[in-house]
Length: 302
Length: 334
Image (cartoon, rainbow over all chains, first blue to last red; front, side, top):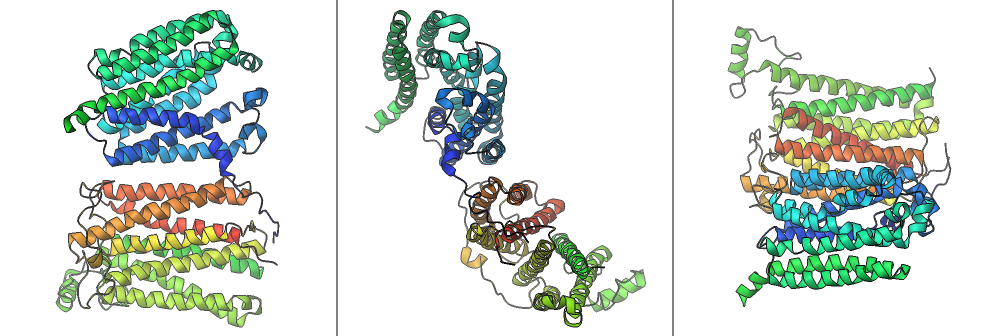
């Protein structure tokens, strides 16, 4: 009879698994999804959709993040920034990470399909595959347009939140999709400029690596102008009011200010500041959408 | 044959036979053949199901006017009884061996308990018929069967472990967790048995809500009266809608609690680096997901016989997968 003591190896270190989920990215995703839910209905989101939709989308995003860790574990071990992630460090085995991703994905699909609606489950599955497999495995290494195309997966969450409530694909939901879709390239390229040496070392064809930083800066500026116009659309189609419009213009002006500065000033520090600003920009823009949406309701109650 | 191998084979046969008796029992119950024979131990007074010639049927229906003879239901019921009798003889043989063969003397306690349980199961089986499907009896009959199955399987794992076939991981750190999993699973299976024996499986025709609400009209006091009067025919259920809904919803709530705990246990074992724990953990997770999907399907597809029987069978397998984990956790010193 085996008398081997294995007390140490069954200690699952949940913290490492939490890192695999990329909690910061997931919370931004969940936030945009929740805003999508609220924008989909004039009143209060039903509590079950809010709860199960958020859990389902959050778990799917965590699953995709874990798959991304698995796919990138070799690259991660090359880049200084990612060397100490759980997989390159060997704290979590590849097999276990795959099992973990499967587990999260299965629960997510079950929750969304049975407790929310099948359309949301299907679209979430598509986004998960789009980010976890198509982007991480192929696009990222195939073309400098990787994040432009891959941005579609990252832009999905507000649509998912929306369909969780309505069960249908609404044109206004696609507007939210468009905003994040256009926001992704300037957001990501700012980071890529800052980290271009890392990406070059790992042989990933990011735009600053393949076409140089000057070209990238121009693209960041052009995309930000495009983003400025796109963010006016919710007002123009009547989905949002004047409160949102003012917010979008102010936030957009801030973003433009950073990217114009970046265009002339080639300091890496500025690229990083632009990247940080882009995150705050998106959070605030969605916060404006949310508050603006409920202003009529609040006004009526006064 | 090596006596250890003989014992292992008997135990294997016992596991298989018990699982068959359990699933067949569920089939009999779910196809409403539990009263296929209104008497016990014979069927309409015979040891073998009557041929069913028209004169014979007339004669039978004169003696049992309240329960006209239906040949297929009678056969289902009797098949369950025959198979259970074979199991009874197997356990009896095991008991004899343990007392009269020296090399089996270490299983006297085990086989004694098993024999007592099998006899009790026989009595419960009789009461199931004579007390006209009284819910508490039906539920206990199910739990008794699962206990016998678990014991057979537990002994088999221990025996194989001694022979080095199926080695225990000897991890007692997970022990409290697995014991808790077994307890909640047992409670959840009891609730499932209570749902079935009170014909509450269709009390909620929708999922995830029940009658369109998250908290429909329910009467938990009425639903969980364990002992009711004798002489009532319980076939088809006697409770009102609010009581049945309470039972059904209790089983759903139970599935969230038990499902959550078992999923955690399964995931934890799956993510361990020990080969056996990992395998068993994966099996636990697969069975758990299957079981939940079957439960949902029962509601969505209006309780088809095949899915209802499978829900019973997978419950038994899930129990065995947790028993396997218990085996891995038990670190004894020989």
